Image (cartoon, rainbow, N blue to C red):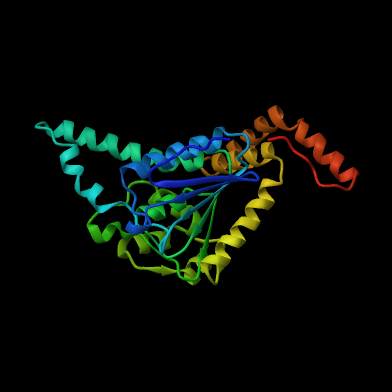
Length: 273
């Protein structure tokens, strides 16, 4: 299979696991224009490629990601330049919506996305991993909502998603202060699922988990992600109705028959992509 080629990401696919690696190590993987757009493109590719069962998102070099590239941030004035104030505001609003959508693509991707985080994960990087299904980190990881130190309001997902992960009080504290959270605290507050001693152990552990997910029914995994995301944003009653509709359409499947047969025959199931 020919894989997409990106300027800011490194991509690989093996045994149902797609590795999407932020690949600007000399810039601590700061998110420039290309990276924002390519994250969305890679998520669309993963979502629409049957051979992809699960995604691992990581960063090359010493840090996972230093957030938005400051050169990109500094160019915003020129991008929205217009003599009419209302037009400037509208252009900026559209730019923000587009960047939001680049990260929401991680949620729209029906395959689970596991973030493997080492070193710095600050500013826009926290927005990025907040949109992932699960987060894992090595002991050297550092997290912060850094926008306050640039006199900015974080606007691409952290303030909307983080309260569901760590609670509103802690989210407010981190957003108001910009203070650092180390990996130990991140695990304690529920920001990450597990902490590993070294980046090497992190990547090995996350890959083992990805293999386990990749061995499950692809259809059921997609359904679980869609139901969880829908239920987070709706009432319990609406979530129950959604899963009833989803199962009415998908429960009686070839994957279900194969899972039952495998248990009867005491063997590992063999699911189609």
